[in-house]
Image (cartoon, rainbow, N blue to C red; front, top):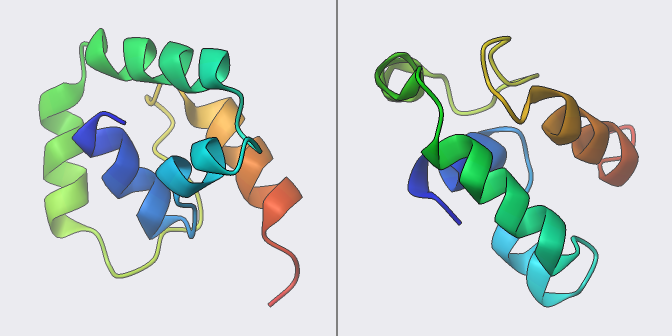
Length: 81
């Protein structure tokens, strides 16, 4: 996974690499997420946000091109804690 994407997902409680290895996250979708992250025009803002982020994030930034899917994974895979 793209490093910013993986870092963001981990802060949200998701391990995209493990989800892909366990085939919970289809390879095609993982690749599409990487493409979206790599082509994002807000990579600098993203890195600044990640550098300043607390240990956990409730949701990805609104400008993230993977925002909707990351929120879907988070609400689907992470049960009430």
